[in-house]
Image 1 (cartoon, rainbow, N blue to C red):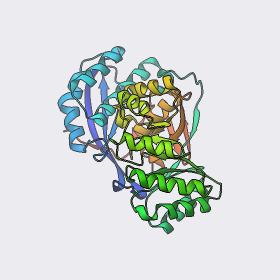
Image 2 (cartoon, one colour):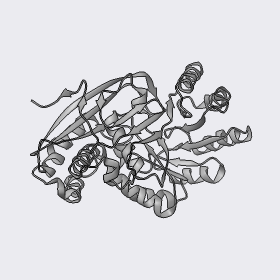
Image 3 (cartoon, rainbow, N blue to C red):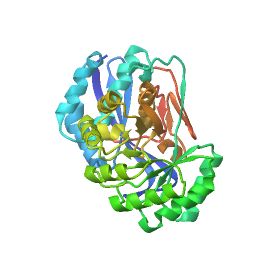
Length: 368
């Protein structure tokens, strides 16, 4: 199976409610989609989310990276030589993790199709039947009445873990979390994500106050800026709540540094940060060697990338303990017909070869 070409498209999916964090506000998923073509007629799918505030990638930079560097690196290559193709992708240019993730996912999709295996089994899973995962749902940073209403809607839909965005209105964070804790009344666990919006001292004060009130928070995610490992370590030493590293860990080297600094109890592994499945596997290998659990996360992205992350989570269930693949659940509809079904809190990972993508509704071609 030889790679003969690649086509790009833009996939836009409106959200049910706007997505608001300490860093940004958006009202739709907006992905660049890659279709890798082969001489057998098989097509591999990948996607990239533009998250400039986190990865530095924009739609323009992703498209330029794919057209100018990454696609030329793999054209003519044989999918049976997957490790060499992935190495070519990494060597083609520095940075650009989301663009690399798109082509990495598409290459893995083709390799799994060639092997006649669902992606998770190609990645090492022993599962022989469809697997179900349970994801959380994000409660965006909004006025408290809106957050309470969104939490009630999530509970009614069956979600049993809610990720609460804090840090946008710092002075209100404690009151918001206390109110949400009372509203869920033990029906769901709460995870807090400050998206780098808290100074270390504020994070310690808020978490100690919550702990003194007996509010059990499942985890606190990346409260301080990504480059502040000292702040992360200080927070971890001062609170009982497990600390999840996100923006400070893109690759295996970052994971080693964060864990050596005592800056995390868990690692958030995202394909868009790690440059795809190969990079994410290296992050997980570091965590596994040190016995540190991981969370499988995603950006605000379509169900193409989220499906690949779900397969990755199934293949690494020994170390991936939490699932935060809720972006398809935040959208008004899922335009992708593939072998991963996102049904509220339940994600069913199927067993057709690769990602099993048969159709993508509303994909706008970017090629002549």
